[in-house]
Amino acid sequence: MKTLAPKTGNSCFGCGADNPLGLKLTFHGDPEKGTAWTEFLPPHFLAGGANMMHGGFIALLLDEVSSKVLSMQGKRGVTRNLEISYQKPVNLSGPVRLEGSLIRHEGRKHFIKARILNPGGDVLAESEALFLVFNTSS
Ligand SMILES: CCCCCCCC/C=C\CCCCCCCC(=O)SCCNC(=O)CCNC(=O)[C@H](O)C(C)(C)COP(=O)(O)OP(=O)(O)OC[C@H]1O[C@@H](n2cnc3c(N)ncnc32)[C@H](O)[C@@H]1OP(=O)(O)O
Image 1: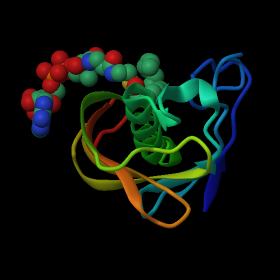
Image 2: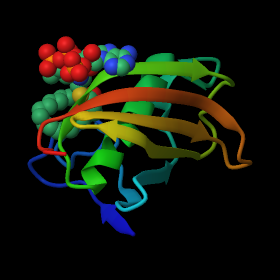
Image 3: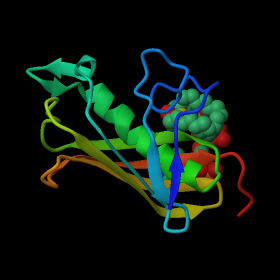
Image 4: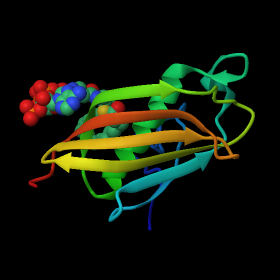
């Protein structure tokens, strides 16, 4: 088990310590299994309408936890594709759980799935992403 906490000098909206508007998320995960997760209470400025999270922010959260699957393994890469399935509204009045896991990789191409769950374990949104990693030789 590994934990990645927000760092000074990082202005990432999702996980940096130095973005005044950012979420400052701390992630946990298992580098060997290729997993990452976090839980947090979404702030209301992520709203779309009717106390539901904006779909663009849902994409951001799925992208973020997917990228952390790689960070846990010491890999650096960027999103090439992100396909999202919005299944149920992400309600802003309770905590959410983000989970990501590596499906497989072929050299620099890393395929990662992610999801957002409510405290009852319902899957609210799911994604499958392709990340291109810069610092891998295998
Ligand atoms: C947010 C700032 C990030 C800054 C990063 C600085 C470095 C720091 C590193 C780590 C920090 C982590 C930060 C994470 C933050 C969360 C993650 C994000 O939000 S990242 C931002 C959004 N993403 C982009 O802005 C990428 C924009 N795209 C690109 O720059 C290029 O497309 C790039 C470098 C990713 C690849 O470019 P090509 O020219 O090398 O390759 P091509 O033609 O795009 O294709 C790559 C491979 O993917 C396959 N491919 C494409 N679509 C596919 C699909 N649907 N299924 C399977 N394969 C597919 C293709 O066939 C190709 O394969 P074949 O190499 O030929 O074997």
